[in-house]
Image 1: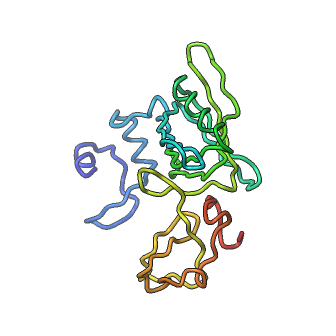
Image 2: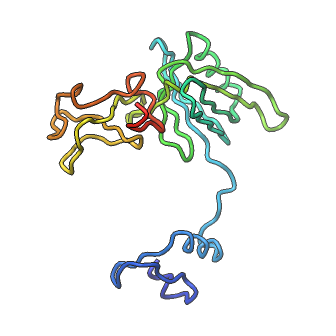
Image 3: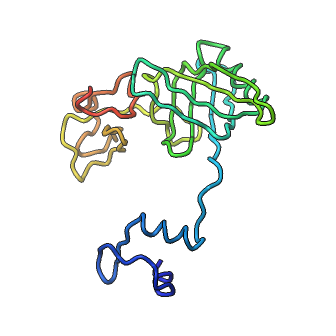
Length: 218
């Protein structure tokens, strides 16, 4: 960025900072980069990756691909989240088999553009699939919104149990923090330690549904 500013007199002027560490408005810089062909707008939405397994734990984990995914997360905890996109017949058949073999498959990990990895312990089901000419097979799946939560960073996925701390969180806290305002306690944390229940209020469904949850809503 410093080199671009030196070479191009029309580069955006700094919005703040110091002489050593200049700060620029993100929108201005992006507009300049686009105008000078330094970056390009993606022509298509990246694919989503689904890591699915039978909810009863019997059977192998399957990793499936969905192109041009559309993820719809409801604000109603009694409703359903939905994901739709294009899949190969093979992947769609595998997904349908896993979802109908038991009460519903477990979505160990969903990695979709613009969304933190999601996990659903069970209840995953296919609600629609149809062929649309040359585009291929369009599949729509859904799951109970009350079960949706953040996926484990481990490759196999799974939900992360976490809750809202009753005690203040200081700068010495070593617990993992989540976007919903909750934490996953670490045994050696000076603030929360091993006394989990007295200092935390677990999220509904054992901490599985965490998106948009705030202390005032518990």
